[in-house]
Length: 297
Image 1 (spheres, rainbow, N blue to C red):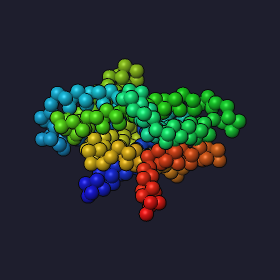
Image 2 (image 1 turned 135 degrees about the horizontal axis):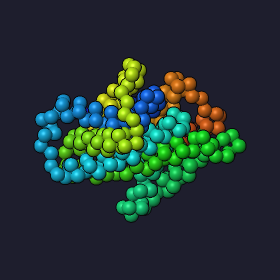
Image 3 (image 1 turned 60 degrees about the horizontal axis):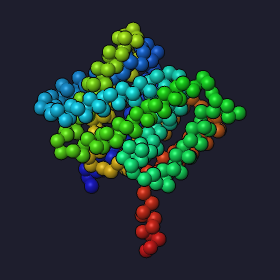
Image 4 (image 1 turned 30 degrees about the vertical axis):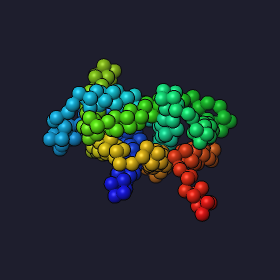
């Protein structure tokens, strides 16, 4: 029980960091391209983790490397979608749309793992679609073309992260996979991809002031290095459904940060959409068995 509580508290802190990360990405992107930013994030995170935990990662097996490579590839799509998305939509939209991974994950399980799609998932999916429409469409319900590219990229991020959650869950349950090493080496592979893409498509840049430099370091060390290592280890001590509930707090934290630090204010319609999405995600991830037990008593 103590291990589960510690794991879940760690995941809450990670989720808070991810909520803040959208604002920090927005700051960092004023001086560098998305691939360059993500190369800094993941390679710095890997370097710090490797130096501090060299004894724990020096003996790594092929199976852990294989899954790390696959997860690093998925992270490339996750963070390319999120980072490019932040450039072309609002921070609030980015936070909530990227969090759709919680709803998308069961659909992927149905398609690829042939698991039945529960009624709760269907209801939550419809509610989330309504929430997305209220958040992203204009007041006359026409498509906001200014934000559409960013919104679609954030949905790509959510789709990729849903696959990442499922692959991580499969990997950490295997006896020959070291979950800590898995968390560290996926950082390297994603960072290497982004570094190559940065040199091909962008002009690499170095932060010119403490505000951007501090944002990049916080993104690298806490939001990336600590976050993915903690996620990989913590998922061994708690259930996937409880992880989903915790991760559903990410858009809430993102919205709060966007309001107080970036001055973003949604329309009434947008806030209604936010509330519907939060309720849909909580409905999906909450186990109502305890209510049935109480009724029987």
